[in-house]
Length: 477
Image 1 (cartoon, one colour):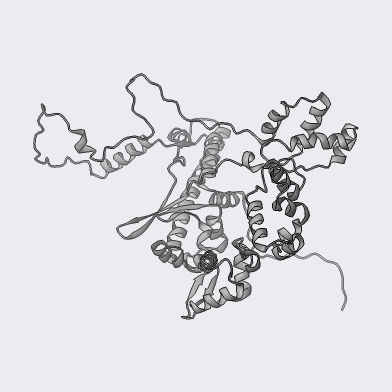
Image 2 (cartoon, helix red, strand yellow):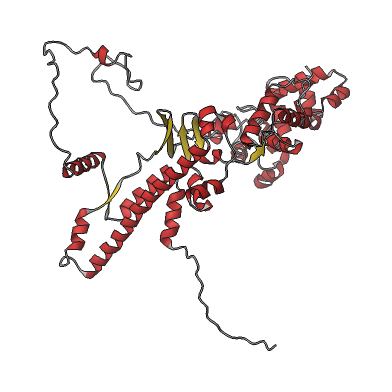
């Protein structure tokens, strides 16, 4: 068979990700807060888009009702004429002594109320620099101290070596050690340590407990302490296991990340994208989009486009392009809203027992199941449920929370893996600490309760819950 180069043409259908399709998928995946910012930016870019005020939206609804003939005057209803001389009893209107908690009462009618604004948090470096300035040392030592403080991470650990700092300042390493020793006396206790062992030792020294059994364990038996080999420590120091356990409890009160006491991030509040409420025994799903701008197309530009004699061809083409873009954006936002509500409604239907009974009623569920039931692709459901939260009568949850693998039961049903984790956590919390449950024993207990689970699965779930194995959970006193 002869082989030679040649050119050929063939036709085949392929899916092309156009720019608009990519933008639609990006809008679908956006949480509510990001969508709010994206629409505000689009309002600035596209002059044909306008934001509808709530008052205008109500007026439009009233106009629609009038056009539909719903503006007829209602028949008067006979009501008792109120006594003009009788004063209004506000206590009857608000029997529960309604008060506004954010507006405290005051006798001064001219008093001003100021909105609370977040205070800028000081970093760990700022806190340490303030203490450094109080040291009575030379300019070079202060410069070394600033360099060392700049090398301390958010957990409070030094991320450079003494030798590197000594080389940078062309001084002896002993000089760096002296300055570092001063920094290690700063608050919070344990800051400036080079490893966990030194961090715990610094805290014991500041507590004046370096000569106790806890101090000796940290200094001489740190590896056995981490492995919880209390028997080996007791034989080395010729003491009882109970004494080692008590020393271990004291060490457990120390902070392994002292810098987090100051450098901790501010609390991040979650804004739910969806709301599930119980109304008359049924769960109603709604979109939490009150702060999302309501968009409409500018009537002035539409009129300009209808008037063929107005404007140049370039202007009309610009308006036409922006008009198409605005219509597509409004349609995409509406499609996003319908898709999110459709997915959440299906989740509520599948996990109704969870909303009724709690985590015990959580069923195994996959993205593919939801996608098949609502006639969408699995990737679309994944985008809808990514980084989005829902407010329910049982709290605020990420949408991914309702999806998990399943485990078989003796009755032939399936339960969610989260239910198994909850059962494992309950068993370990209620176990006898002197004789903790092994993974095999936990698997046997769950099997007695009708849940088929292997020992290795118990171990995997226990590690996911950040729980120690039985040997490390054992208490001797």
